[in-house]
Length: 187
Image (cartoon, rainbow, N blue to C red; front, side):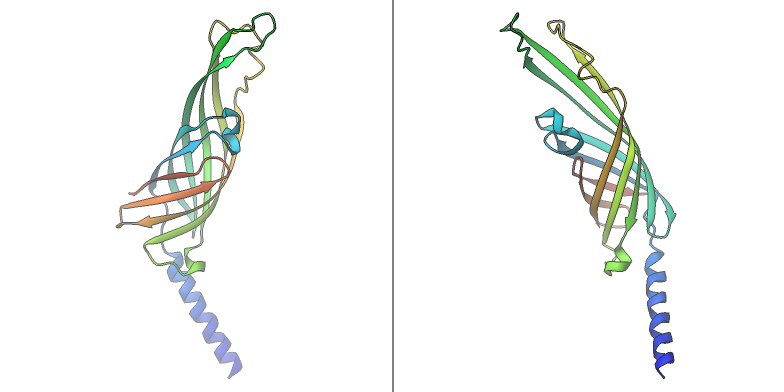
């Protein structure tokens, strides 16, 4: 009797996870916006800046997607050159950064017993950031000092999405870089 009960429980659990695992997360276009500048990858900026990102999720296996992404932010800041030869000289520094890479997400909906309106995930992003820096003509210092060129981009995420219907949802993505809110279009 004990074996039959265990077999029945195992079969019911397997059926539950198989039924839940059939949900597809891919074929989703995610458009997000966040505020960066004081933490994570963007901490060197020292001011708040809007950060935009777009990705497209593709189903890989049950509960796992890969999403190629591209992001964008740009800022300009005026600095005092702080040079004893030019004590009152200011210069302007501008930077545009375009992170490009892939985000891998694992969905825990079946494990958490979430209904069809909610998705919960852990994710990691890996890529590189294309950085373009420029100084105005009043800067006579080392222009290579701040130049980073293309830098490794690494970010960890935890997030959730609420589905309004089968084609539209909103998401919150908390990350080690810039946390974002956005709209998800399920195609």
